[in-house]
Image (cartoon, rainbow, N blue to C red):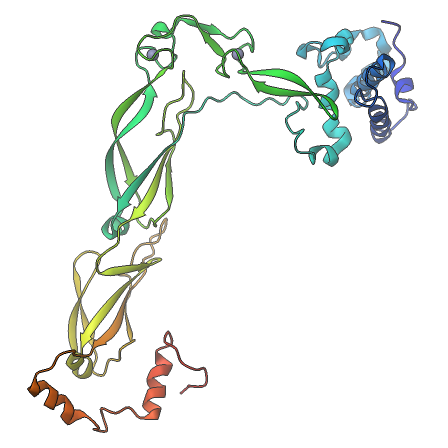
Length: 400
Ligand SMILES: [Zn+2]
Ligand SMILES: [Zn+2]
């Protein structure tokens, strides 16, 4: 390699250039000499690399200070921040890889580059994803009734799931020892790959094809699990469903799902709540609704009736003259709110039964009431009653 040109000269800036001026200068050079714009042009490629190396030093206050003091004499090790990644093809001569070059592109091209989306996978300044080998989540449906929702419930279910093989301790290797760190990725589970894109060579991290991202290679496979490290097993799983859950809600039990192949993190157990319909009570969020069919004499004369609760019954007082459509509220007899102690109410929706079949005697009793002033509602009575029954249809003007 010929003698290195002065880095300030390479970027065409003065020794006192501000970081912003340096950035702008490099940006210009990077666009001008980008390999995609100059296919097969060795001189352009050289300039592209030269500018990148100059920028790498001058954009870093520390390196720039050392460079100002010692110049190139410090040699590659002085500026070899990226040398560990190894050279890439023709660019590697100075210990400067394409990874180093593209690692700056996020800074240089900023949002425009990030916005491209599809280039999001290129390696940026050595940020490394950790290889995580996670088992599959296990999704089950669990039926709960109102009592379960009221008090919470402990459930036990026999579930077939993948668990770590005991024989190899989940490693997949015979006796749990017959494996070694993967030579291709050195145990990281990822390898760097350079791809040609419209912006030039892009470096990305991909799952190691040698070990499938597991970081290790098996020498002798475990005979029990065939080297998978997991076996299918039916086990009894216990879990608690808290009070107040709702239909369709998913509870996540961390780490209770399937074990991962050859060690790693267990998947989660996802419990989807399926609410059983209650024969008497209708759920409305945390309130419960009971449709009470009241006989006409009790509605007119008053009395008491039994209404079902989630557990047991309650006796409810019916005042004389209770209208159909009236809602009687039993405070706190509804369901608890999920993650709080607050209870909803039990709303008793009163309907009045109109007899469908009558004996002659009953018929004449009712006929004797017909037309009586207290049985026939006046216009003002109608207004008064309707104005109290806010949930039924009535015109705004029908007020007090
Ligand atoms: Zn095994
Ligand atoms: Zn590997």
